[in-house]
Image 1: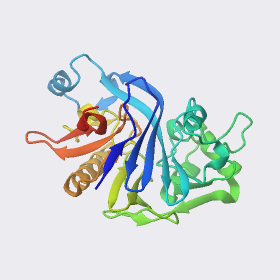
Image 2: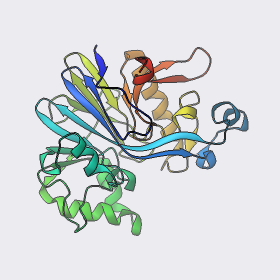
Image 3: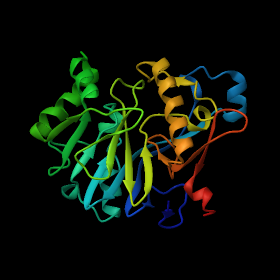
Image 4: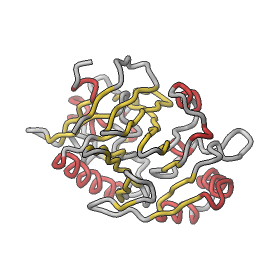
Length: 281
């Protein structure tokens, strides 16, 4: 496998591009943050002293742009605050996006799907949701699904539903991308596996929110999880899957550059190594 970084970076950057076989994946960061562990479930004082000694952990809100097999594909949109600027820094206009894949329908993942007038921000793109995620948010009552319902109406027949699978991902009608079922954070939460020229990379969505804590301690959940116990079980399975198969990962809340390797820790849980650190840049 060949994974290369396009250029050096600083932690203040919003965009960076990696090679995945013949494809590329670009991190598009909406927000850089340092979060407090108040919303974590099961993080003991001992864990926090070791992995968040300053009382905070690094995080982000990311989307990703994949260029694969002649298609330009956006994976999530973040809040949408910097999305168009980040895309244009890569020479990409919203009209050039062929498809948008959504890991799940929380606002920090679908916030960039509509423009200021409520029309599709990506007028030529098909929009992909897992069927379980779509059905869950269609059934939710109250204000929490208002944005989701507007998006579904706006994209109309360009909304495409699919059924991801596990433990091996299922094919999408997009060459080089498969969908892995990763429920727990939400019922239809989905990760997307990119495959090109013998290389693979898993965009795992919200498998972690506090990566510095949840890799060594996958049993730690977060209050945003719809089903914390299922989220913990899913995280354990996916971490084992990517570590055993040596599949690099990208995450929507992993701090910039947000792409790296997962490996088993000799002591506890797993370790995450950002690609830029691995390459000594």
